[in-house]
Length: 280
Image (cartoon, rainbow, N blue to C red; front, top):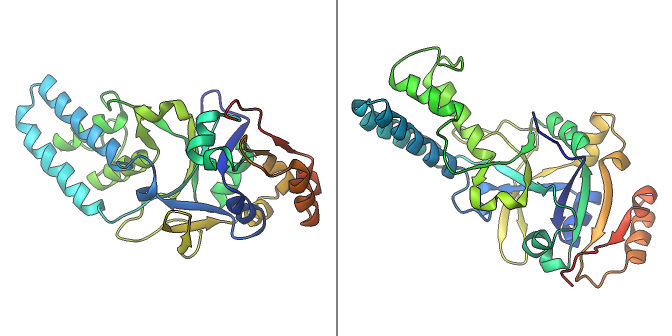
């Protein structure tokens, strides 16, 4: 459960993506391999391995250490070609750092979503929508307890898991929602798919698309927010709460409002405003 959960989450992006989210394929979820943390997914796994070895040493189980290294090596090899697709949000409203990193250096937009409604839409596509957790160790994490039980061949584990596969499935799921502690200031939330297994996906997002960005060509999955709202009986106006125009953008509020009205989003047109960030 989220502690002190936010009412709104902000997705910083560009105007092309805004058009796609509102009127075309929807919100793009990109491969974890394209994220700004180059060790996405594997960072938590490596952290868990260090914590298990540390626990072995503290409990004087030296004979388990080599076995732990072998198990982690095997699991990394199994998962080396599997992927997670995700889209990122932040608790921060109109934040200078978010504008610079993700909002086209302040020339883009930030879209505010109702957090609870976004979670409902994500669930109907078999997606997770949760707070990202940050940490420097996994010393007190449940997964460390469970892997110690694997090494002891003790099942069910402390947290009720019955086999190694289930434990490492959990580990990869945790890893997908984890980032290096150096990113903690971003207060990130994510919509994400469960990790693939041997290329098999577990979401309802359809085919993978190849899309262009100013810097590269990426693979992505598209989350149709309007369709999801319809399936969950949520009015789209209750999902998208506001649009903030970036502090360095030359786009006028009046033009965005007219564009939204022309495309049938009159209520959302009343929720457009300029950034008040000091990034200007």
